[in-house]
Amino acid sequence: MKTNVFTDFLKKIRDFFIKEYEYFNEPGKKIKRQKKLKHILSLGFTYFFLFGLCFVILFPTIQQILQALRAPQDLNDPSVIWIPKTFSTMNLQISMRVLNYWKALLNTFRISLVSMILQLVSTALAGYAFSRLKFKGSNVLFIFVIFTIVIPPQALGLTRFLYFRQLGLIGSEWARFSLYLMNFLGMGIRSGIFIFIFRQFFAGLPKELEESAQIDGAGVIRTFLQVMLPNARGALVTVSLFSFVWAWNDSYYVGLFNIATEKFPLLTMQLLNAAENTQAVYARLSYTGVVAELGQDIWKNPMFLSAISNVCALLIMLPLLIGYLFVQKGFVESIERTGIVG
Image 1: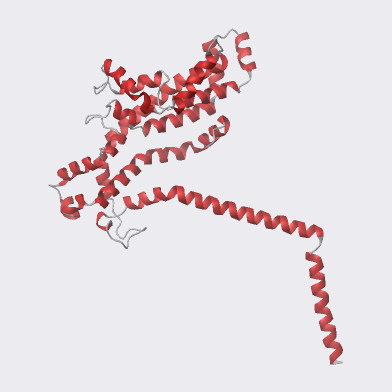
Image 2: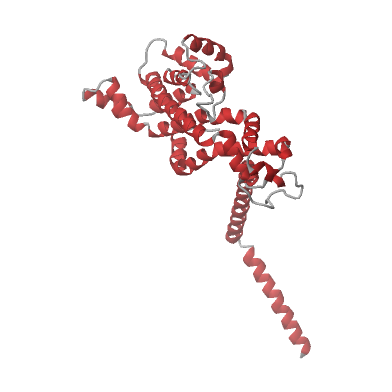
């Protein structure tokens, strides 16, 4: 009797495993499980790659933020790696003095905004002309426009410097108008790329739009302003953002034309002169309690000077980062419409 019960129990266990094996090895369910497993592995790899890429990209910014909030006394402490022992805004306050921040911020914003508007006007007109107003030699001229993309600005810097010096714009109160003139004439920072973007965008618009405007009696300028530009929103947003950011970060032309002065400071030039400006700030703060709090030797510490330079760079990036939060949706849509990659 006991043998029969034990035998029946073994048979039930065997039958159970046989059913489970047959269930999991049915052709339809096996294929479904394989697809699900591939989907999970693919999703896991994608998230792992994206998180790793985001960390690599955001790591310098996170490091700069933590340095900005670290007390200067903790810069040489080897135990402080990520989280500061003492949170302080002293580095931010000193960096803002080094940059002459609010005045330089306003001046940089004005130059970037005017440069962006002038580049929009010139490059949009040139792009429309190359795409729609075909004339003899237009393809040859467009090839020269493409060459301006690959030619470094340093190769043309001397001739531009000599030309604007003859006009009396170099080193004067009107020096920034040399930069405006370049942008208005389609020779600004990366203008060749912007002309190419507009040309490709206008070439992709239906010709029926122009034909219908011409039937209504619209001329070339009216067609461009009332028909083509409203349909080029993606290209306008892309060129506007790139032009503003590149003008904001420009230090080559600003230094070449000697635009930045004591009365007209700019963020990029203040950052380049951060070491000298730090010494000037030290001289101004010698009569306050800040020097006594930090110590006399803190201004000779290379770690401190490096931290101040990093915080200054963070303060320059900060307005762009904040602005991007408000325009990121339009920026992504414009990038997709214009087809920019890389």
